[in-house]
Length: 410
Image 1 (cartoon, rainbow, N blue to C red):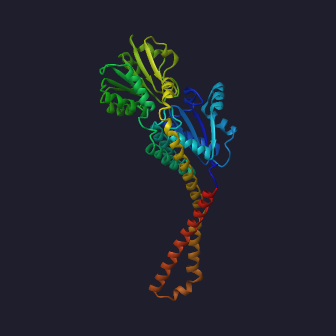
Image 2: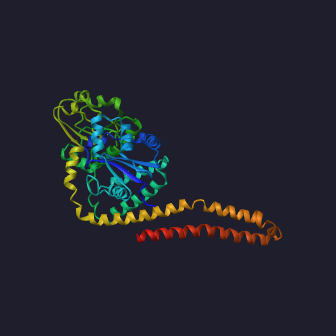
Image 3: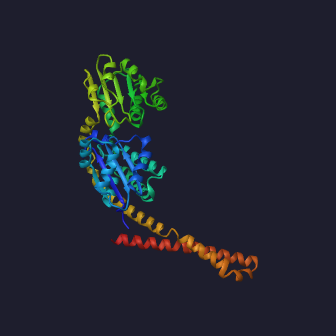
């Protein structure tokens, strides 16, 4: 009994372009249905799908090896062009067993992030597991894995200095925005109202920017972000051209769109003059024709990656401490997994012992019990119930201890 059922397919910024990672993006509201379809089609025990601005992780539970044929079958669900399918297939990283668990713990602990020590990834990992479990897509084994991953990552962030003054993607974007030195009354347009734009919006509020407008596919979410920003200027994407014609000096763009949102028509809607755009969408929300607009300054995820690369060494001295915690977390996970496997193997034991008790008291010793008075009969029933409870718990306890002892010796 080991962790060989745990398998991960990873496409991330270290092995693929940000745009190619974006090809496998699935909007959060569509993820449950998509994952359910993948689990059924590929006959998996469970799956957790993690999609961030720079990585996609297919976290699988299956006793059968997830071969190249099944990988291709999964990727074909995204409708990629042949060239893109080839690039993604080559860049995709596969992990299994303990190697998969190490990888997942490294991801959740930010050791694989663009910026070492950014805490946002732990929240994203936890939410991915929570979503899968809420929709009954993870299965029992991935539930155990998720618990161990989150607990270990928390230890990394609290017991080391890896997150000291950590710089997240949102913070990097905000640093770029601040470098433009825009006056506090500069008109700002936020396109999209998800978690990323909300995070940047909080930076705007703290800095004193108030002349902000929000447009989003959902008016309800646009209003929610507007409340954070302290503005009543909201609209849907149908109002986008009108918002552009009002001449924002800066734009913060991050939507869940699978394709570029802003094109040549949007560029023409903007009045003449300099415009700064912080594009945090994956894939990019700006197509090539929009980027050709004169006086346009763009900072996107590719540019942020360059900055992030320079920051990766900042916390390097803490990595060895993190690795020690990860190995400890891996061992705890294996013990927890083995204990759970024992529990599942003995899951029928309580019912078996209950059936034995009912047969003994209802058939074999029924006549003897009939001869007892009510008080004596009650004492016998209490003794039998006590023994039943002990005979259920003791084998499980001994079996767990035996398995874990063997694991510690191996």
